[in-house]
Image (cartoon, rainbow, N blue to C red; front, side):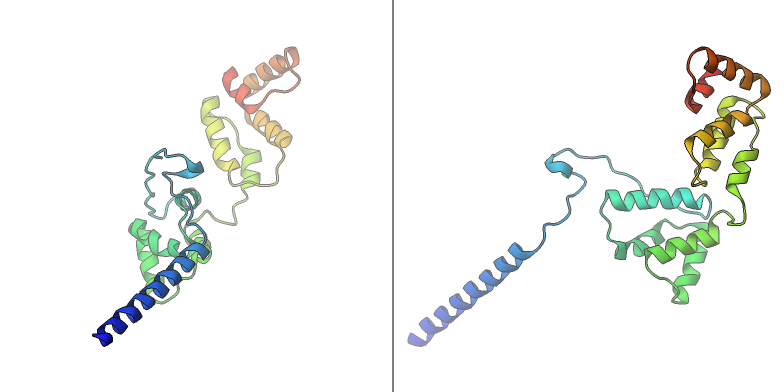
Length: 198
């Protein structure tokens, strides 16, 4: 009987030690990142965001959306490459399979860089020159849309320069309307105001 009592005491002691060890580990762990349903300590359920498929077209737009998705859902960098394979289709999937089969996959930054090199816009294309040479051929809205698209690939150009560039690409009659309007009301108009004048 004494032997069973001793075993019971030893088991209880070991259980107490195990529970104490687990509690210590739980207390010392950093808190998990907040889930999308409880950001800012609010119990507001945020909308489910679908991860976009990638077929090899519009690489920079897809990477922008993918990175925003990862940040929104707190996807760790080490899991990103494993996740994106489920959203590659057509040429992008063939490219990924080639990298995976030849053990050429790296971390997310390396895969992003490879995506840009393989599917992204040509680095030889001078986007700034294209932007400065752009001319309106139809509506101001269509011209503005094209201007914005090209401008997303251009860096280090100030707002004043962009405004002058936008104005110089408009049809002459619209440029004159804008100049008259800006001299009568305000010394400076934004591109948004120029688009609304048409």
